[in-house]
Image (cartoon, rainbow, N blue to C red):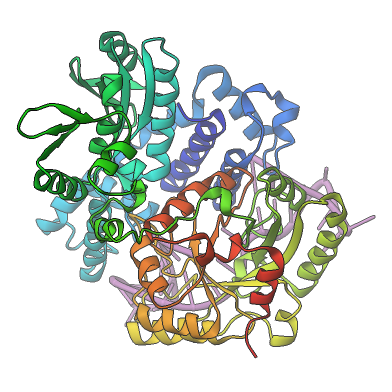
Amino acid sequence: MARANDEAAALIQELADLLSITGGDAFKIRAYEKAARAVAGHPDDITGLDLAGLRAIPSVGDAIAKKILDYTATGTIRQVEELRLQIPAGVRALTAIPTLGPKKALAVYEQLGISSVDELAAAIAEGRLAGLKGFGAKTEENILRGIGLMRDAGERVLVDAAAGVADEVVAALSRLPQVERCAHAGSLRRMRETIGDVDVLAASRDPRPVMEAFTALPFAAEVVAGGDKKTSIRTSTGLQVDLRVVPPESWGAALQYFTGSQAHNIRTREIAVKAGLKLSEYGLFHAGSGELVVSETEEEVYGRLGLPWIHPALREDTGEIEAALGDALPSLVTVEDLRGDLHSHTDLTDGVATLEQMADAAAARGLEYYAITDHAPDLVMQRMTDEKMLAQRDRIAALQEHYPGLVLLHGTELNIGPDGGVDWDAGFLSAFDVCVASVHSHFTQDRRDMTRRLVRACENPHVHVIGHPTARSIGRRAPVDADWDEVFRAAARTGTAMEIDSFPDRLDLPADLVRRAKRLGVVFAIDTDAHSVGHHANIRYGVGTAQRGWLTPDDVINTWPLPRLREFLQKKP
DNA sequence: GCCGTTTTCGGCCCGACTGTTTTCAGTCG
């Protein structure tokens, strides 16, 4: 189901994980991890590559190339299969718990036979970890908190995983002659940051072959329920997909109904009732006679209720009905509105693509400007130096002549230290076109210190954008604690943009904070934070988050023409 | 396991934080 590159990368990463549990050489493990990232980020499909072609991928040598060939031939890697026999999948899953790494996972497995997150939670509750070397009270507490964080994410998946499945289902069903229209709906259409199950809607007069094709999809591992109107499957990754088939004339009403949210639907149905109407997934009807009023398009349904069409990202009953009634809905920013991207990495630091490949990708996106923002020296592991950064600037200047339609900007992603300071002095910083500054450590500072830290970063005259401001990792790391209103006021006052990082596990700022920040006069940058060519596709999720935050193009600095952006980047006195 | 205008061998992702281990291992970015 996933791209071959992603599947091979996942297997290589699993090999690294399993070796780290069984105690392999640390450098070898890192080599696998690096290769996994490189394969996932490689722009060409590995299926068509021979040994030499595979070895041409950076960080892939002879041994890993052969493992990839093993995968393309057999669908798996022999060494992974062998290690899976030694280490149950549940033990590897334990390492997904924050603060619990491979060593502790192996310890609880070998000494207590624990091989799942549930068993571990139960063992802690029963006090069975007491006395185990390396597991004190604080460690237990941290593990329980980590498990809680994972369970809050629950069975939900990140938006990109759901979107990938939905895209494949919609593409497959759309090819059927019986299907007149097909689209995804539900929380995915609203661009929620996590998705519980995927809702797909099809318009057809002949549902049975559609349902049969649906349950015959290669990744349909289990049919949960099957009928003429609704069929549910579970994919091999455990994600449930619901397919509803409706008559073509009901399309608009059904799409409105199945997009939700529940709260939004209740409001629209109330409006219908007050107007003597009844709204269902089959249409808008006269309450008394049952006569159909409208049903073919969402616009007609909303229109007959006295409302303009409401963008799916707004349908949460958080003020969109009132705004619609008052003709005050925002004209939301779209992917097409973006002229540039202000945050990206190359293989000079932790990216996997070269400067040239990233510039090509930006040009392919049709961007007018593109900032390369590799990490700065304070993130010590990235081993940045003044010399490397200056050499990159020269390379960018030389590369520019190849891109008549794309202006390459030289920037950096600074590290916001615990006290709010950043890498480099004012002199060095002032020579960058754009500086993003982000929190990468000391996530647990208390609210007062964290607020002061972020405010100070905003006040730095050379910091233009605060990158992934809450530093959260969905399902893994909680957002940092700060007085966000105070941070946003500082950002507005100092002309500092807040980033919306488009990575599906970040989506940071989150939509609710985006909305709060906008009210306080903040502007935003919707960035990919791309570390590979493929990451540019994530921009749809960043834009979705911006839409959920009610942003218009004017709120987003990278929709602005370059001269206006340059003026903004001049920033403060 | 990968890689090479220091190297085909010997480096590589270092440093800080946390909790517990009384001298440091595990985890993380």
